Length: 221
Image 1: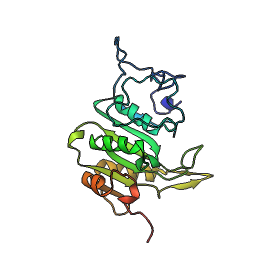
Image 2: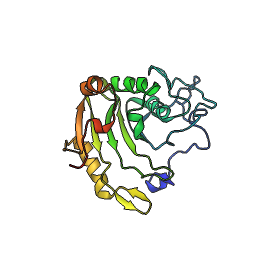
Image 3: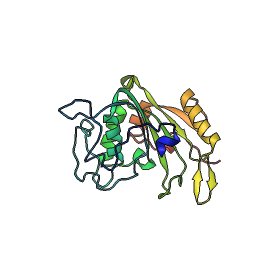
Image 4: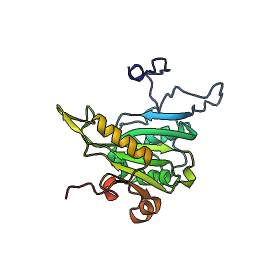
């Protein structure tokens, strides 16, 4: 249905399988079963997947990031899988809980490694209570592998205050989405809303903590 709504009804679907234990997309005629890589990935994975390691087949998806995602929380497992599925100049946008930006333990080492590789181009903070089944705030992490080694900062947007109540949930209006898209595309810095944050500030001053309020004060006076 998602493909139909986005005018991609001829899209290829491989369902009813776990993305971690039985991935379905591999390079053509590859006897070694190398995961297929894509130019673009757009993903809204299940938030905070539990026991994501059940039946796990690795395929090298979690190598090179200093640590592995914790078994009881698959948020970073999804992010590393997406990174593995991108070509060398691939781009992605993935929705994850806001807490992935600052949680500790193994997540610190993984987050540090991803930041040092320069893969994160931007972070967009969203309002809470947007999604069915959970009221937790989420964010969009924008990945761009192209020229990652030269990336010297991350563009952040705090869009958490722009929404309308719609029954029991919050909803982004067309104007809210438009503002996010234009601001990010043009890299427009606006007080209390958006800012390009130098990588030295993320590393040195904040110890790889990406919590948006550390960099953008959007509180009311």
